[in-house]
Image (tube, rainbow, N blue to C red; front, top):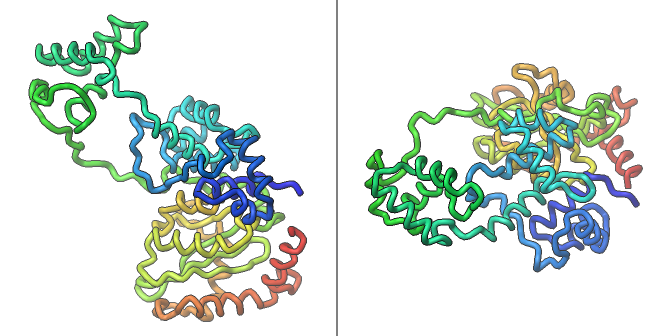
Length: 391
């Protein structure tokens, strides 16, 4: 049996999150031996579970400089799956194209596929083996830097002079940022702490700039124009459209997802304030109950309730596409389904009175209703027929 790239993605994500090869294989109907062989031949990491670190998606970014974050890696994977060029991916995440090129060259698997979870795991492994801090490893360099700061030199001037005087010896070159860290960051270096007062700024701690600009959470998101053709023609099931149905005053809500080909609906129970983390959690719980080949993509309105779309993409291994602003017709299947659901969820009502069991009962009724667009089959019948052929 041949397994698709999406199936292997799901298995590799499970391994990165700590599952054994056997348990990861069970998620997609493959043997543990098969997953182990894929892992060894594709990723190249150790095949003993005890030697494979566990991906921590909540690990704070401690990487020096501007290394790629997990969210950016997810965007790169989604862009590659959508067929975007390196230049376009770079534009979307606000990076130079060379960064994308290096990332793909460094972390692309032997099968040619880039997987965000594996790339982040490899990066985390590298960060756990940090290079020795240069001003600790080279005591002579530290003394020279201290002398220059005593003479009133700025870290930038020191870095420039070292680069000029030692063009071929990296052990005697240091960036101005490294000098600042040695002065201001506790435990980072061997420079005397009183030297911080020697700098022209006179400050003893580096302070963040005021007036931080707000950045839209959807700045780097995939748009509906990025969706592949197979989504548009409904030929392959597994592509979903979603939105919220709001109650009185927008104080309560129910999430709705409908599969484009079969019109099968899934309802999300949102007992709280339908915040981004609550919507993401409910969607991940419900969608993870479906086979991996029924989680190919999700299209949603550009609402703040889906600001955690990067976490959804990672956990479901499916790209999330966003409609253009004020364009609900771009997810017409979901709009039509929501109109049918208003039979139960009337406008102006308090939707928080519905519990999870009640929502499942409504979804069952809707999925058991014959649809002319399906040749009078029900969505449940259409979905089951597809699952039978895909098994």
